[in-house]
Length: 328
Image 1: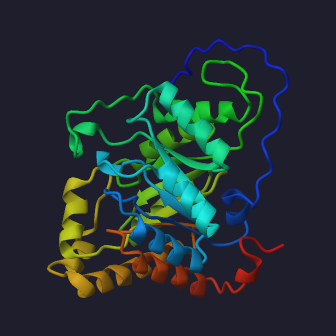
Image 2: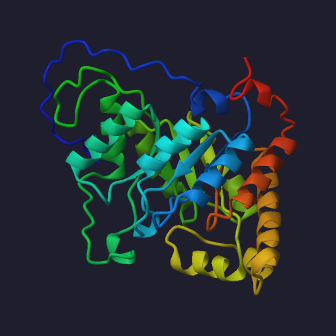
């Protein structure tokens, strides 16, 4: 994707970004297993359960709490606001998704400038599902920027230059992630697309959830030549209905026949228990290949991801939490 034509004004030297208070995820994942957990912002105005879940995940020593940007085009509370709350109230690291769908170039840069002001420097650039599939199907899908362009332009902010080319007086310090869907027929073509995102400036990769141990190994073989970390996506299933919905209705997600059969007809505590059991098996398959683990919480059932996070720490024999977030 070609870069947008912008008029670059020669700026006075921009001030460097304020120093980070913690090592970045890029530094941490080079040294040990690293867990980031997605927790969906609420669809209403009540944040109590979201904050309870964030606190439980922080107590389980996750390395970041990541928040989608109106995933599946369903209206949710601002992830910028919630990211600030988990950072300010809990001391957790927020990782904010930014969808190309919802904001034009003006709104996107404004959003990023606000994140910078709040000290939130880890982001994930995503295209975003079209608005017609969400709860407000009559709303516009903006797509002023592609995921390639938004990555490139975020890295431009790190040089202290606005989307327009004007100087910003200070450099940002964003660490930018790229989304990767390995649940495709031609994995090699998906990796080629991913390589273009890396050329645009992506610093790390977060995958869609994977439900097949063999595919996890194939992803490793297909991406091991890349020089940026991959966070493999694992989303515990809550019920048989949840499994069928993800498989049949959600773009970019595909469940194996075995997983669907094991979840068939299960719901409630029984369904969640089986979902966690399957997720632990997938973690067993992933951890020999990937330091980066990306867990996705279903329906704010954060206890499932707390359990899985503790499982990662147990399997990796990590006991250095007093040195959080990184051993010196």
